[in-house]
Image (cartoon, rainbow, N blue to C red; front, top):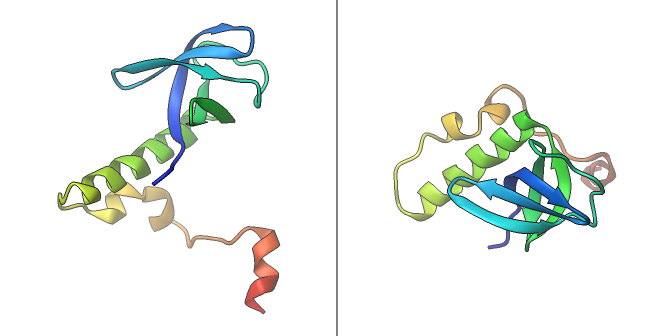
Length: 102
């Protein structure tokens, strides 16, 4: 399974940032997202930043990834607790997919 993971920027250089997720630290290519600063959050896929995230969105992604990891490990999971943003609202399709439902 391929999935983007949230990493926080520790330091930057031209077109790359040294980032951390938990105990893991690595260099991430930031060419696709432009300038970033220490403290910023990035959605990372294959060592390349695909999106700059807010801290709140990074937390949501981290909780979802954690839930998936626990389910794959066979641990019991309260999905309502793991996907809090979906408990409070009904998931919505992006506008470009809505015409397909008609």
